[in-house]
Image 1: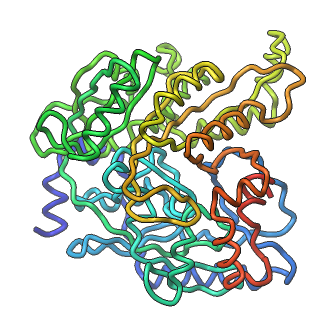
Image 2: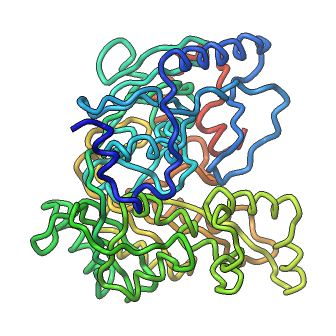
Length: 474
């Protein structure tokens, strides 16, 4: 079946919200790489190498930069899609929103699509992304066939799991730009139908959720029905739902959570639901999971006049940045006599059997609900984020602030979380603030492997180290 006929078969509801534009092609990509290399050549020999990106999904402070960043303005699209091989060549700063807009009309999606529209493919691979397909497809970097990477030495190399640059390929995930930047990634695509049928299954407690996740991870089914996507929402210790997604072509009426209805609230009130594939992929983006409530976007009266184009994660992220500049929350806290406040925005991976223990501790020490649960399994060992291959972990996501005493040391609550997750044999993602000492950090995040690869590909230390980026915020 040709790409055009697949496109024509898609119902209008599937196409709503897709920002369709032609793929860039190889000539445009080569020109963009040329601009990138030219901008590298303009740097002084002692300047640190960094990207000049307009947006970011990181939640950690960054030092002001006095040197110009690399020009990646032309590296933000899809180069080519091969429907027969089920692969796509994608530029490093292409957002998943733009990538899905190109692949979905052809009947394909990436193996793992992180929840937020403006996460870039290069960002998800050099950082870490996760979603409901991760229990069967691993993390975004595990569907990468090969990458073109600009190294700290200013050379672009093509790295894959085998061959001359396999060491760079293996160490690149979770390196957060400390080993270079991907200019092109060839990824595998998954063929998908038009719709997604959901079941929101309530679990009696965390232990019951663990048993259900274990069954689904092992069999790919729940009570005889195939499970294509699996995540969960824990509203309280005794109100935990697993959302089971079944990809289907069976035509059914679909729900719409891009308008007045809010997806996470439907989990508590509906046992079953149906979404278009596009709306399922971005179901969490419209309200930034549940965090849009902090800005009033879930107030029914305000929501009616809140433009739809501003009900999305990148706009909320900008509001957070605006508050950091203006100090609105700090002013309100002074009026309310709140002694102190700490931002606790983290995603952590804990072994499946340790999930009940973590949630019990989290309720006692942090007290933030809901939290997101996303099971995952890695398909192989990755030195910089060493989860055991084939073992089931659960990503626990929690995003908000907590009140702390006025004289609290910086990162008091976050440090407690780091220590406890470490004790449980887990890890935390590094997109947000981290407080580890360097020895512990290097033990947890492949410090020796990173150092060896840096000696080869960044001999003059033009790039910041992972510790400098993730903990020292340089």
